[in-house]
Image 1 (tube, helix red, strand yellow):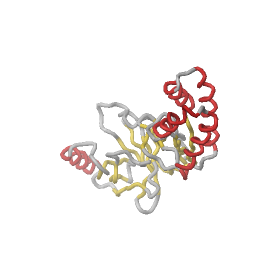
Image 2 (cartoon, helix red, strand yellow; image 1 turned 90 degrees about the vertical axis):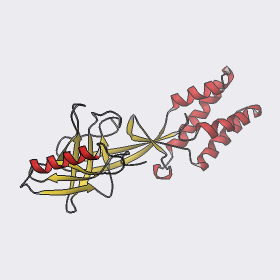
Image 3 (spheres, one colour; image 1 turned 45 degrees about the vertical axis):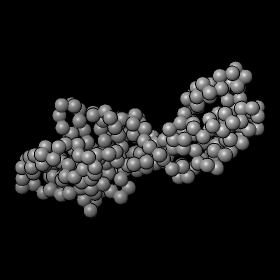
Image 4 (cartoon, one colour; image 1 turned 120 degrees about the vertical axis):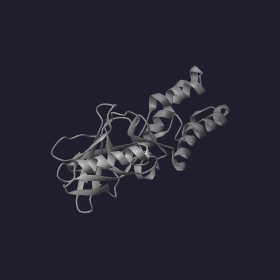
Length: 236
């Protein structure tokens, strides 16, 4: 899981007196053309001429908290940053899509409380019935999904490497089933399914238990802001 989406910010310049900030460098493709980026930076420095300014960079944890999807331009974001001496929260807001993003500095920090592993049983059952439409297979599929849920409930999130982020839920990452647990699932299917369905079951697991499959694992990271107010938790 990448803590920052492509084009996210690598450094900001901040006015200590006003608590406002502007982008200094982007991590990848910039959010603005070079000329506009330069103009925004020059304008910021002119507005805060004579004020104490400093550079901010993401902390080593590279934690962020988003109020909504990456693709929504009005999504607010909080990033844990540092000036080398203290840790702060930098809030990115854009209430109007016709206006540029604005950055405000706040006291506080972000804490990753936990990462949970889950499994969408409804989506899994839909995929099962498409592949195995026989009415006699429905109950078998439900048994296999229940078994899969038992496996997922015992998984340690640190043992499941994330593959790619969910664009609609920035604190969710899709992951493939680790090989040992995929084997457990396969064996359970071999035990309860008719032998004639074993090849189809093996192909189903090979496809659907990948990160892009309908039986994929989902890593949900819970991040919280630690400050007096506002208090917000994710996922939202």
